[in-house]
Image (cartoon, rainbow, N blue to C red):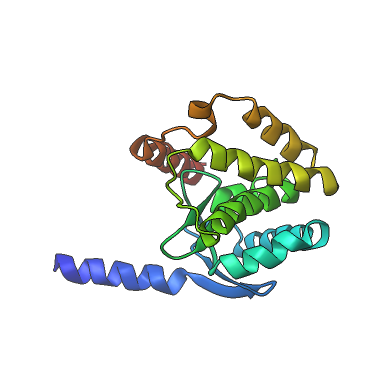
Length: 192
């Protein structure tokens, strides 16, 4: 009986995942939050890709080669690059948060694209010198933020990060605690 319930839950989750092609890139949207409009997520993702293509077209071309697609779902950080699938994750609530501008979403995508670019060039993703990789990604964010209208928050955040010590630029994350915080945020959102 338990295995049937598990199978049914998995089939239902699979049915709820939205698959689209956005600006020439495959997107898989796993919207587990009824308070979030999937159309808005896809629109802001498209707008972010438009900014990258307009202001840093070389990065737009690279990310289309280096990413297999996008995954948008709840996750304990803004973005991630998954080496195994070559997907760029963009966090669901970050993508639609009212205080987050489209340039910040684009900068997150660009940051993860730099990780993918390094991997495509043969650099190991789990390099011992992770801080160096993070700084490389932040410099691309600064380049983008200085070109795009409304990019000031992107530049400020990236410059602030570049001033940190190596251990703070690429901190070790306790994913268990991060998951607990995310789960609590979801419970709080569903309660309101």
